[in-house]
Image 1 (cartoon, one colour):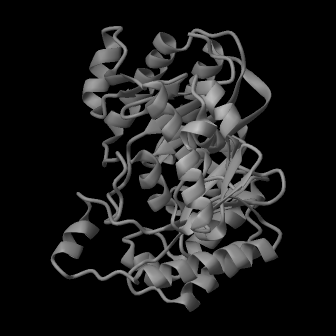
Image 2 (cartoon, helix red, strand yellow):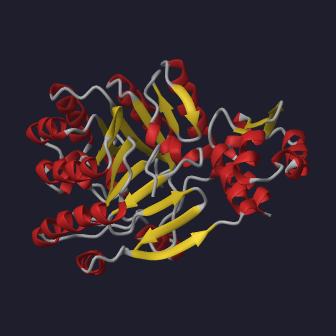
Length: 378
């Protein structure tokens, strides 16, 4: 498989515990499981990667990747680099929770090769953090950023959540103010979504958890956009803001139908319309790679129209929108003509603008992006 222009994603499915709103593939783990996981992923790297071109981004997500010692994360980085040389300007991200970071570990993460840090702060309000079931307080979230600066990190991203039950506008604005005062290079603002199978979903069904309402969510989103733009951040994707030159290049691959390969239990991949996912069970994952078998749970070849639909929905998440001429050429379809009715409807409703062959959502369209996506898929 040619590896040119690939993004590499490494999934670490371990956490100290499950947050009540989390629907991601994560689980508690013993030290023995963590130690056994690293050689298994290294073996998948050997089985999977055979290209000789450079990768531009590597992203370690989870779970909580920093449950692995920095030396083990560095070991995985080296295994990737042996099979797939990294570009000179490679972006190498590691996700972390504030309580999983120390001054020493932050310095060591830099030493082994990471150059972008994504911290799951979620809020700088202790009441909101308690509702979310987080294991850190606001003080530790601030200290984590300050410790990162002391360790030489120059590219720090913060994840923040709004629309949390009981959260008010004042609390949300105060969290944004603190994030901006720390001058994080990148800020992601996610509206809380209650997913089936989570503790929050069970509490919602029981009537024990009441959301803030769509109107308040929209007001919070608008407040974040206004405040961050005023502070010099670029709004480049529905949920993401960055200082100039500090976009997350890895995530842009997802939104632009770029090729990426996922490594580790539960990791997903997409290469030129071919999509596959690894088995999510760490034990089964380890057993398969030990036998020299790629740990794939399913493979799917997207039909051209579906690939184009999904590509359009993802590209419309970005401020630049989608160049339909390029999208159609990539999928072997005439996107401008095939979406003509959708385009006219979206423009007429004030949800999108069309300039040449480029379709982009308006601010109101971004608030209703899920509805826009359903219209396109229909």
